Amino acid sequence: MGHGPCGGEREGWRLMVRWCRARWRAGSGHGRPPVPVRPAVVAAVLAATAAVLPGGTALAAGTPGGYAFAEDARRVDGASGTADAPALEPGTTYRSSLPRTGTLHYRLELDAASDTYVSATAVPDEGDELTAVDGIRLSVQDADGGTCSSDSASFGAARSPRPVTAWGVRAISTGGTRCQEPGTYYVTVERSRPQDSPPEPWELELTAVTEPRPARTGATRAPEAWNSASPAPLTGEPERLRGGGGFARATRIGQGAWRDDIRPGQTLFYKVPVDWGRQLYAAAELGSTDSGSGYATGALRLALHNPVRGEVVDAAKGYTGRQVTAALAPVPPVAYANRYAVDDRVTGMRFAGDHYLVVHLAAQVADDFGEGPFPLVLRLRYGGTAQAGPGYAGRSVPDGVFEVPAHDRQTASAGATARDDGTAMTVLAVGGIGAGSALLAGLGVWTAVARRRAV
Image (cartoon, rainbow, N blue to C red; front, side, top):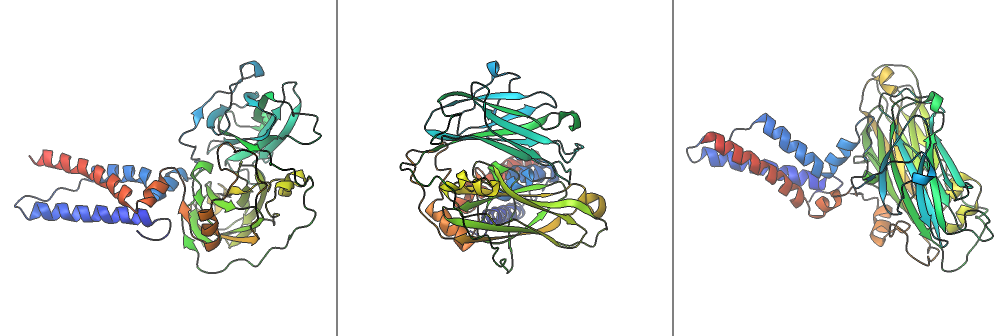
């Protein structure tokens, strides 16, 4: 099997080439005409293959303006009031639709022993005309209408259509007076400024996650000091990879330099394991171009999201055609007590697990510099020292979301990469055999059709 994220993909192509050659020789060597290569059939086989191969998944999902929703997402319709609000089950991903006006309501049934996190990712249409303050607002409320938490996300100065994510939490705290009781809670999602918003509905992806309490009581104050200095960026030849088109299809990466391509209007997702006690430093570089001239405001945007998809910190840079770098401000080492801080950059780094780097290139870049693609380099470095976690009293839902497995710790530190987008890991695990089987299955149909026509 080849090395890197495309090893299985390359092996699948080799199998296909060998098969084609064998069919040609078989036809020519026995007095029969070679099996004809029909473009339409080839296109169909390659399209089917793209749906199976890891690279194909990322390519299909990462087209400009697109978002790769979770394949297993359940369709749910938000209600206009709490009486008819549908239930959201922790550990399940949902897909809904957000109209221009009105507030959608969803229901949560919670205990008094776990913290619960909810996220909503809104996806506008590619051609939507947006304002800088347009976006979504999410809140978690108790049965009396009291607000447990609220968050909003806007499209910013670039005004480029892209996925935006807001998150909320119902947290159990010592001495807390609101949102501490078990029972029914509600999640509301609405557009921030309906009067400025496009008329078409936006698709939504919703998630709910529970975090158990620690078995032992620890610090109840956030660390007062941590290393906020940025280390020297990593250098060296970047390794090629392809970003995913959504949270559920994010490409797993670790420490190192990574090379990708991005088009105007495109959003790419990368999954980065960050353990307890570790810091993450990240920067995105957009390469130069000699095609066109001008200035695109906030063209390159890089954001870090935590394991429950909450945005922690972001950075944006304008583009003039010269290379430009968007570097995230340093974040603290991952610690359970970070949740007690006031600064969002600290509170967001409250648990270990897979974090997400989200890169967006504004659609208006195409107006001055063409459709691209433009070269993109991600540089990641870890700081801090891995530590033991808080010692949870139970299991999270979904299981393991706040953990970094041992093999991922080694992968992250070594700079190796592997895909984690549904069936793609299975394909890579068999070293191209699965991909080759898919290719041969499609080509088998090709052979049958060709033989029938020859007869």
